[in-house]
Image (cartoon, rainbow, N blue to C red; front, side, top):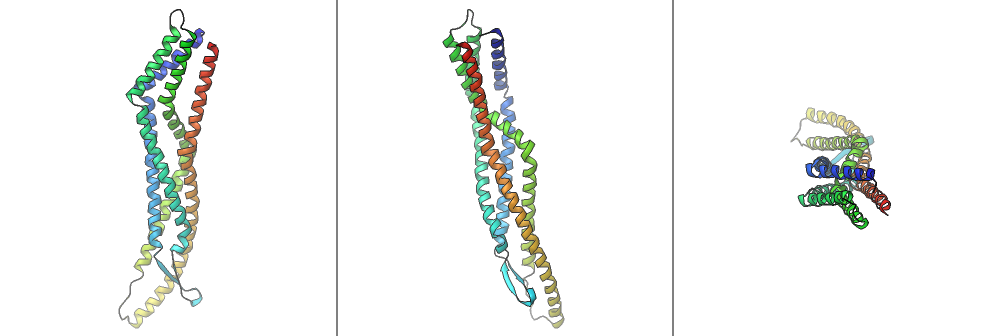
Length: 283
């Protein structure tokens, strides 16, 4: 091993030991993991809240008289498609939140003092094999490199994929997530308001006078127009919310499955290439 390679491996080992002992990588990745987990829980709560107000709306009947012909239907007929989508989205969010929670648990395991001690010992073994007076045997250097690479993977693979996923999410997905979550919250509030207004308008008066009946007829006509307009608005909101739900599903699948696997693969391939070149130079 040339002097340049010895210095390079010494720097790598020293940086790794510093990161492991100070916990800098653990603290940073832990903070990002907590943010992602809380974000998933909040989004899951939004989805369940939307599902709840839709369930209430399914029992709300609305009377509309187009052309003087009375027609009764439930608001749930309009919201049935989005309700099915919300239920599927809730299942996706439960899996996503579980995945992010599992990352937090595994992160605690990689930050365990025993794992840190194993990494430090592997780094010390590498440095000893690299700088041993007179030069260590080729087999000793090969085992030192292999052990160090395995220790790097066990100690830093999870922090690397968490930090990498966070960087991609912050750069490309966070604004989309916030906008989609805001749309779902607005849709939930709109449906809840519609339910409340329809409930308030179902009161019955006892023995109304002629003037009261006339006022009720006028109020009913105005209300019919208002209900028709709000129903159209509700349809548009449901359509927009459906699009945003699909966007959120894509975002969380990327964040919890595709991106972590991609960064894990890149990390493993990088370690394999570095180890392969180092071992090849010893041959």
